[in-house]
Amino acid sequence: MSENLSEGKNKKTEAVKEVVSFLLYIGIVLLLTYLVIHYVGQRTEVSGSSMESTLSDGDNLVVDKISYRFREPERFDIIVFPFKYEEKTYYIKRIIGMPGETVWINEEGDIYINGEQLEESYGLEVIDEDHIGLAAQEITLGEDEYFVMGDNRNASSDSRDPSVGNILREDIIGRAWLRIYPFDKIGFIRHR
Image (cartoon, rainbow, N blue to C red; front, top):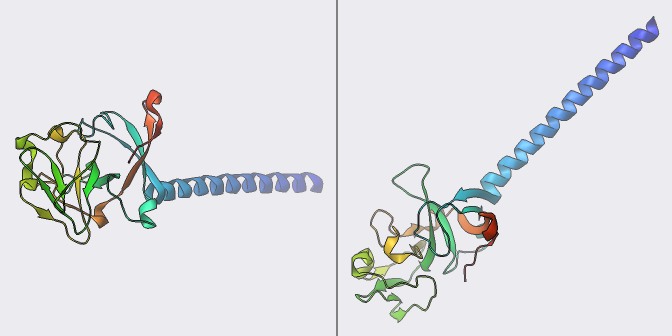
């Protein structure tokens, strides 16, 4: 009879160990998931056509949230930042102007940085006069400000629009890193 009690206690002890081990495993998985989502990367979906033809409406991306902890953003990086007038709304745009630079767009739609025409191959369309916005006058960026634009220049709400304006360094969440959907377009995002 004492053997039966001993066997029963061993089985209960084993069951408790299994439950504790399982709960610990689940806790570790949840903690790692939280750390990855908040500090390393996050999934986001492109809504709209402002970044055509680089990114399309419905594209699912992974945003790299860690690299800017070790280096500064660079010209032509595609970044994600919050829209200041609508909670849980994020914009994705390309960096055109860097801190301390002066940005200006002339009547013909040419972009100038510090008086020199910007050579780039992303915004292939000519910027309509109606879409020059704030950049019709020279904009001098502060020490921690970036001027961003969508690649689809005539269909983008970006730094030319007063509701967006210049983007502060502290507001940059990360850079577009990897397209994971649609499956036929899976791959790393081209920044240069």
